[in-house]
Image 1: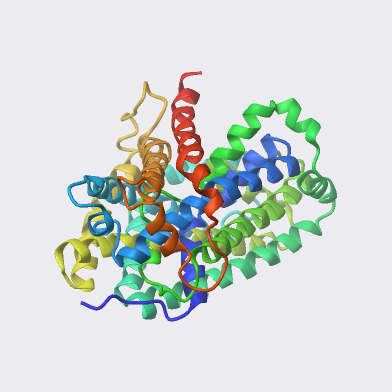
Image 2 (image 1 turned 90 degrees about the vertical axis):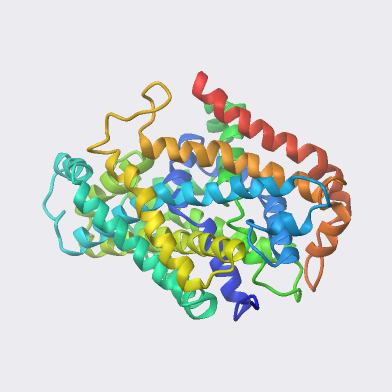
Length: 455
């Protein structure tokens, strides 16, 4: 069966970025930026993005393009005879399914809030009522499950149309709309009365704030965010390498994807910080920022219902772009492993993902008594922990070692693949860094994730 290809370079860049761009860009990035010193943190984050995330993304793209298959078979095709690198296919596949086991639920929340905001259900509500609204949603398993199923069916439906006619066509429109809407929201936020203080906090570095927060703690946070933001290590990025030709070198393409991912995170901060400072609200972490704090801010703004609707439409696009990209990977796993048609892969996986996603939905109500790690994590938190703190760093380590070790694919073959085509080349002088130093940094991030749980 001939492998599908992207119809355009723009499609490849936007879809790869869509995989990396998720809700973490919008709620986690602004929160930790606020916590660790505003603009000064952003500069440190960008430095680590360049030396940490970018090389691993180039390696994932290279493995995908050289093998012309998903992570389900890429190691099998490229590994030296007799080696066991292909065992990691199960880790990569597990990572994609685990990510969707909770991400589809959050995608459902964004859709529900888009509808609620558009219908004016938050109009006139006080802060306490908005908070109660989110709590009430968590206690409605049927509504949450229905919207999760809607998101799964809609996104798999797009994938069923094929790479060019479905995934590329729809994601290009969604990503361009997402960027346009976010810029409009950022401009509106920046013109709010009292927004200047938020802009100063966000745009002008104050390294005293870094010292106050603790330099090492800020470095750890910047390192972690720069690593996790690109969804590396589970083959979710590698799949798109398998859909492109050798006209362009992969370093240049990875830079475009990384810049786009970073722009979305930075624009999210431009939306949230001025608005929060204008209304005297501290940016908070996680769901409470998106589903409690921001609806309160929109209630206080002129035309807040319209701005809130646009914001939650952005959130839905950000979630859906990631879900579609990962579903494409899951479909490719099935097609590569079994040789089945795309339609059959979609049909089986719709059922599988819905069933696997139900525990997360029920973890907020019927299964709320099910907790992990001494009661500190509910089902969603635990699934997120398995992906973010385990499969992403360990998978990235596998890609790093596979591309640099003589016992794996090897440096020469990796560099030849990465540098095929016109554009920026992966430099030979980086070999020592990516072979010995970067794996230690990734291992440190993995250990730090567990250490943070103990202290």
